[in-house]
Length: 109
Figure 1 (tube, rainbow, N blue to C red):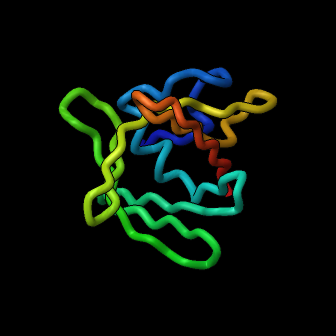
Figure 2: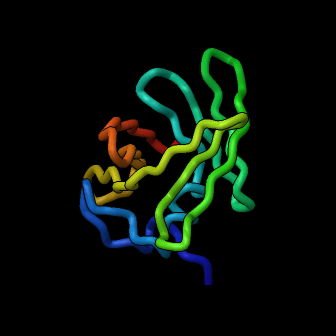
């Protein structure tokens, strides 16, 4: 049986466990505060749409279980993932860029 977000018992701000990252990313499209959206595919592709313009990239987990995104031709970034939970329900993900601490909050659509 596949894991669903309803099966998780997490609190707001908890780190997404390595084994839950694929489920967290592919559960649904994410909408960001600036109006952009992003869809992660189980095969490692991702599409980010900003102002109606799609950009295609890739996501993967490295050998240490860290989440990375790659945007051709050369932008690569590593993020810590944290759950956004409201009223006991998982509603989104926070992406915190390692080393820069830039934070992007996405809510499931």
